[in-house]
Image: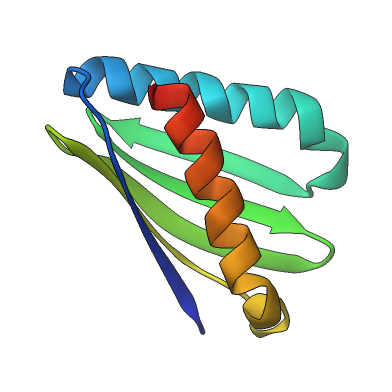
Length: 100
């Protein structure tokens, strides 16, 4: 399965960055929940695991908040490979805005 890897720098305390990302996920659930068959995350400190499903496709991944950066890794369904760049850009943009 294809993968994505995104690293976003930040200047926040790790817990503050993690809290902001949790709020971002809640916002995504509220805004796009009707389009998603699943959006679930579990956090252990500053590390989170997620699952998302849409249009019959599922993806999993991790979010790790490090002292100066957030690292996101995930799988993409083969059908989404042609949109990988757009998906990565959209995620990066949302995370950068939330951590600014």
